[in-house]
Length: 348
Ligand SMILES: *Cc1c(COP(=O)(O)O)cnc(C)c1O
Image 1 (cartoon, protein in one colour):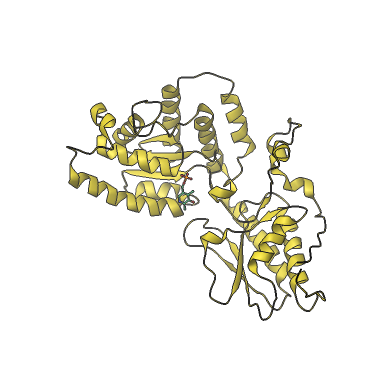
Image 2: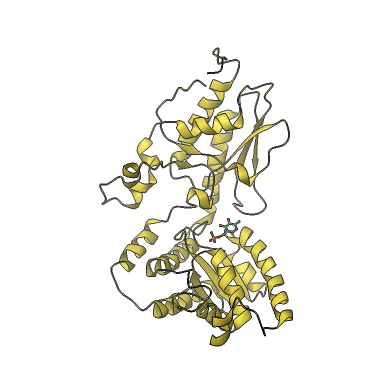
């Protein structure tokens, strides 16, 4: 494959790691040989999900300088979060998946310390109760998937006993944070089933003081954001990407919003190998290998139609000016691939 790269307009602005630690002179990821990239995908765990806002980083670095009692902090943070969201009680967990586990455990054990020690051995615990709660959690699972962005309040008002959100996705808290919200007694029980309690099923789901405080500040910041301006900016970016490919005839370019998870505008580019001799994998590799590396939506999250090449992009995790860089680069790789504009069709 031919590889001709041109430098982007503003490479410095596509290095978010620098923005987060302006005082640091070390380029840690470069030292380790770890590639940073423009996230043209979305909040994917494998791609490190989201970038924390400076307010969150500042809170975490503040927390790192002080000793506190973790229980006292968790209680205070929970009260603050509950107040912000208008729910009965809350706790910070080590992610939404951990919240499902300690939330389920809470339903099984209540505040009985003997049961907290006993599970996952369910001997003597009532079967019907377990099934009923598990059923509820199936709903919670689906809700969490689509709820991260717009629906923080709605689900609480629907009357669920417990609701969980990932903290490191759209809310842009620490990646290993999550929220468990709901009934006071169940949150107390969930905390009994979690670190710092040493003899509990959730001891491994440890949440640091930095994460707890970072999550509180992420939530405060999230609730204050100008979501209308944010939505407009996403639409501008997606239009920019779409326009950059508009005159390449072999491509079908569509803007769509997934129904669940990453429920924000995306770009779907499809083509046929008969009209454009390049695979989606090739395009993906070329985007990665450019002067500024660009990551598209991971293939595991969708299925391309048969006999059809497909690549997808999400814009909501892009930093300022990155959409311009991506649009330019997208146009470049697709135009190089076009049989019309590329005379060198021989592979290798
Ligand atoms: C991230 C994510 C989860 C898990 O959340 P964590 O906070 O990473 O545990 C579950 N479902 C979907 C759709 C997600 O995107």
